[in-house]
Image 1 (cartoon, rainbow, N blue to C red):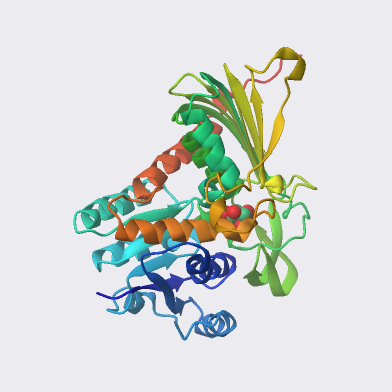
Image 2 (image 1 turned 45 degrees about the horizontal axis):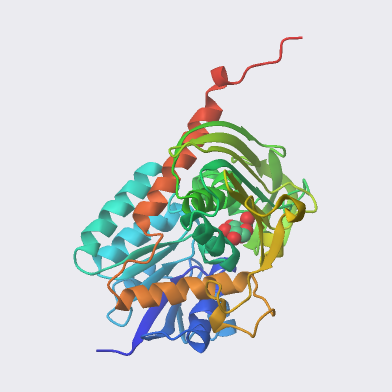
Length: 391
Ligand code: SOE
């Protein structure tokens, strides 16, 4: 039996870099049962894939994902492409007996996500695993918040307040890239970052969202076309010609959770000054937690049982050896960063491949998030739910 896990990464942009960095780094900090080896980088454009492979030091690249997912020397297919290709690649890879790690949101529609989940269930019966990249579950602060909920420190959960605020689209002349095209991305802020909030809120609170009432809005309806997507923006010759933006710029919704909590969610890429403020606050009958990814090494915790004189939110530095994931890293206090979430993710995936427990979130978990996304869109389309103010 091979002592390595051989990975084909599909996609050659931002997420591909984050994943390859993680596959490379995980074994340096975590005790993995097998050594990850990124064998192949696949990109739609052979030239760009070759450039990315050279920079990221991957020996081989190709534009042919179909051939890649059936190769004997590949164990894991890691999908880092826009949502419109997730279903086809994942289903083919699972059918070929490859474990699949797929970026979030799982798909562009519930129908696609259902098909992928059914394929994952068939594959699981043959020992093949599926994972979805809701990477924020791997933030030590959020993992600690979940632990506090499970330990009963928050008591009965009443409020779940989730915001995911970014600002990289604030400029009306930022280019029209795939994240602004519904056919490619499925939705806008909602699926791109709101999906993270939905997953984190359900995972940390331990409650599922049962219903929503939503509002979606697009502030900038057309943007410059041309050039190529790079990072979150673009490179090359973006022209003065503008094309339509077909997704939401901002999403807001209220939610009822099946355990009795009420939720308020907001996702936007127009919150000028907020770079990656992925925030979650939960208030229970005994205590509260508040997390903001812009201070990702901290978790705020309020213990309602403290004596009244000393009550207040305490700021826990989630950097100690007793905290989730952190014992493997730097000595206490030095802290982690965005890329480290992906390291934790692949460490969990590799451990699960060799263990007897499926790493979560798997495709079925991600399908659940997709159903919430669908409910939000359906609610936002139903204008009868929007009550104008009578003046
Ligand atoms: C862009 O909004 C983005 O890169 C998301 O696609 C990621 O999922 C999130 O982690 C950071 O922001």
